[in-house]
Amino acid sequence: MVKSNLPDPESAPLIVIKPSKGWQSVDWKEIYRYKDLLYFLTVRGIKAKYAQSVLGVGWAVVQPLMTTVVFTVVFGKFAGVTSDGVPYAVFSLTAMVPWNYFSTTLNESAGSLIANANMISKVYFPRLVLPLSSVLSRLLDFVIASCLLAGFLIYFQITPTIYILALPLLIVILLLASLGIGMILAAMAVQYRDVKHASGFLVQLLMYAAPVVYPASRVPENILFWYSLNPMVGVIEGFRSALLNTNPMPWNLILEGGIVAIALFVFGTFYFRRMERIFADVA
Image (cartoon, rainbow, N blue to C red):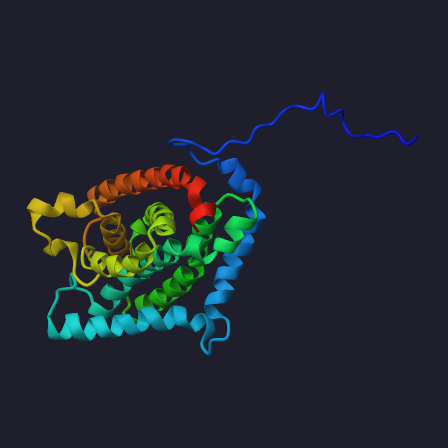
């Protein structure tokens, strides 16, 4: 008779699996344990965007470049929008670099759960990995667009200020805002499918609520506080101050927008966790 090494069923601990209820925080240790899956999904997102395309990663240069050309002609030449004393082309591109990253991640995060519905319903993994991979996969576009911006600075002979050291802080605020809103949209899109379509329209409206085509100095003082609650206001104006030396570093805008970005990130994680228990049933 072969002796079994299996534990006695009667002495084995009883484990009861229950769905999460209420508002719960994200288990970041669990996210770390699934870091390989996060890496795979991030790489897959990069490859999927540029697979079988003629220009490949060149689209990360073409998109902001062509947008800058259009904005320069329409707003810089025809509309005569001021650019704080620097050429409008570099003024516009400096805003487009963080804005393109923000808008792209929102659109892709909104559809990240629906696009991976089969994966969600068949195997367990932290669902937060999906919108997180959407945010991380677009960092390559951000880096390439930043290199294009560096070329513009060299061409126009513009020297960044010492506040270039604040760029990591601005990028952190950008990431927090992108992931926070992305998690909210992703969770809502599972239950309300029109959220994915509405997110594109929302992003277009938000662009004009941020100083992308105009400077924040044109905003009336009496509404500047409410205007600065948009996290992208402090990020964009901070980029311009650090790289173009257009105005003093807008620490007040950065502080107010940073607080909102943190609040969006915290609320987004709790809301995502609350809705997570219905993803497999609805997706």
